[in-house]
Length: 414
Length: 118
Image 1: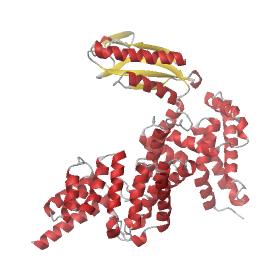
Image 2: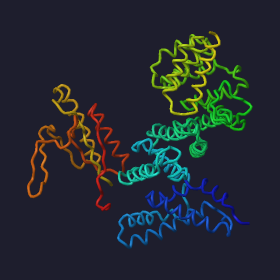
Image 3: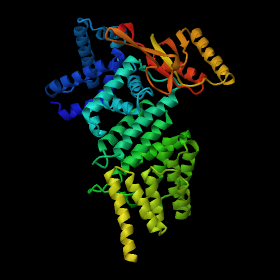
Image 4: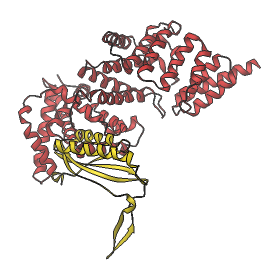
């Protein structure tokens, strides 16, 4: 039976990280690994449609890529290219492991930790992870982050150069360093997710492909490190936030707040999966910031209507979050929960204590509380400040709409 | 193995008084001893303030001499250590020990070009 292109695409998505990771270990060089894996997939695109899928597509890709790399390096090393010679030597030294793939999963973990090394700039960590682990092209990454392709290409190539020249190691960190280093990995994945969830600028309100990519990375981490509670917490958090995506933006690209969403449009399968992970995290009882945020989202997912929301529980969870990771943004979210339980005055009093003038949601929350308290003039001013502080056009449109409603009701009252 | 340059950046101006400086220097010496004991120390040195530096630059057949330092800045390299370790993680580990000993001063970790890199 002929193999469809979509089937090759599926294999590419599933096996790219594994193949690159194995090749980096074999040759000690990221560029050689990437190029030979690309060669192997190009060969697959030519052959598989006629020959059919090989019994082990992953093994076929890795073997083909390794042979391509050795051919290329032999050609180049005859031209006294020291770099190529070094890579061949590296590969020879590892020929004992060449027959079997060794601990393949560890290779993917090594690759992830290398891409997210703290010696690389955060933007470079994100780009490298999407490129090497996610298999996205430089053009796709550039488009997702709204930078020109040459800029993104330079960012990636500079990061690869630093890994090689500064000798950033290709390994999973020692236990003592793992919490910090894992934190950096999770931060990269969550940043990708958030960029997909609320694009910080540009025409598109969300970039679903980035959200989906972040969840794919989250699932990979969960598969590789199932005993790390925060890994599971991050996956649950992303699944639960993602479950609301169909209700969050209307067909006309308008933002719908949680309280006003059509909850029948929430993705029940994602909610069930996210909640099951949250329950397992609770039983394990090693809370962390991602797990607590996942639990907060699980409480929202439990409520059939906004009015059914268990705000007391959300308040408690924000107390827990503030205890391990206090920040003004956590305090702002906690104030929203307090307002729901104790009333808008109590919430506003807490909000007014915060030093968050540059954060648009601080002004949006204040505006909403002021509006509910009937202090329309102050609410309108707060909406103006919120509008001035976001570049996301959908958020701007939403806030302008809210502000307009105040003006309208004001003119009716007059 | 790979060599790394650990540069200590310090603000220009008068050094801290002895009661502050002496314990710092003791801690820095202790890190140096630790490096030697671990077999990673290659070379190290402290420098006089940047105000003592002179810049020479070829200008045709002449060499121009000017009062330095070359880069105008409020901070300059005040000392450095060369170590030889397996990879950047190990170098950052030693850099971390050095900056902790120096209390507030940052340490820049930079790889040497290997002979094999050509």
